[in-house]
Amino acid sequence: MYYKKALAILLVLPLIMGVNMKEPAKVMKIKIFDASTGKAEEVEKVYKTNEEWKKILTPEQYRVTRLKGTEMPFIGQCPLPPKGGAGIYQCVSCGTDLFRYETKFESGTGWPSFWEPVSELNIKLVTDNSLGAQRVEVLCARCDAHLGHVFDDGPAPTGKRYCINAAALKLVVTMSKNTAKNVETATFGAGCFWGVEAVFRKVKGVLDAKVGFMGGNFENPTYEDVCSDKTGHAEVVQIEYDPKVISYQELLDIFWDIHDPTTPNRQGPDVGSQYRSVIFYHNAEQERLARASKEKLEKSGKLKSPIATEIVPAKKFYKAEDYHQRYFEKQGIEPVCHLPGKFRKK
Ligand SMILES: [Zn+2]
Image (cartoon, rainbow, N blue to C red; front, side, top):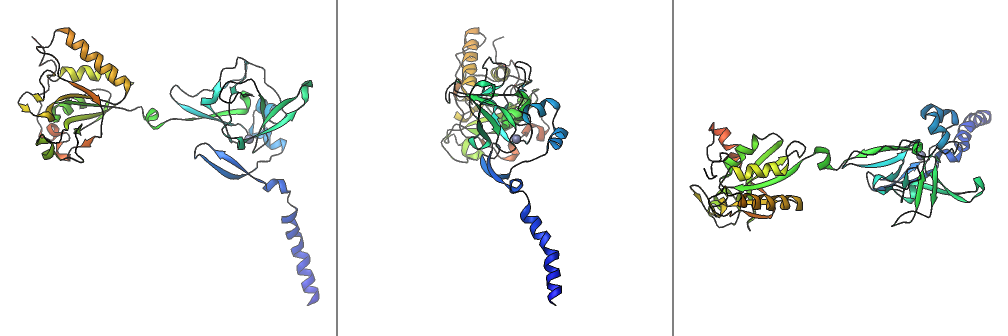
């Protein structure tokens, strides 16, 4: 019995020791900041042997990050996100978020320069006395990759210049929702919305058009409410378009062309404030273009009377009932109410 116990302990001992004797560094946990979630998270530090690093890094990446090399200035290729996009530069060795593209600046040194890291958590600063000068070395906090140095001659707001080797970085491109989809919104009121929707739906670059109401003082209006002419809402078409295919200016040209902008609160046989001619702009640029195009049309002499069109900021869009959407399409009718050029002087 006693021998059995001793034997069991002898067998188990190496297992226990195996666990305890693991190098403590290998399970060391640190907190780093994840730029995509905006949260600090606990992660394990990354350790690899030189042979393991050589397998996943190019010779230049290995020389810079693992052997503390410095690349030649103006040689390193620092990728940039496409215009309008944003990006995060990560550690080429372990993928830790290091610098945001917005904090990159042109320092003239020939190395990628940033004025701020993603988080103090993600980098490690170490005094470096090599080259006969005291400098501060910048390392990746998670894998100890050598990144570069930091100096006190950077721009506001931090005054820091993180001088980083391009070989130590990889770019992850992030896009805002609208930039990625490349969709913008325009909203027009030009009389009965059935016909206006039918025209814009056929325009190349228009991704979607919905009929609804805007500009009143009444929550969730129904078609009947709006037709009472007491809600203040206008019948509008809300357009989603791809500005790379069609510009806001071109949409304005169509808007002016398909209705009579000179009759206040009226479009042909339809009378009431819900039929008013109105441009609901979604940003300052739309407002500028709308006002300029109104002025241009006014001066052109092509209209019989002054323009009555309102140009006002967009308010909440209330989508009309489903049976109003694609109305003419559903009825199999070719609309004649909003024909291009119909209202111009002959
Ligand atoms: Zn790293």
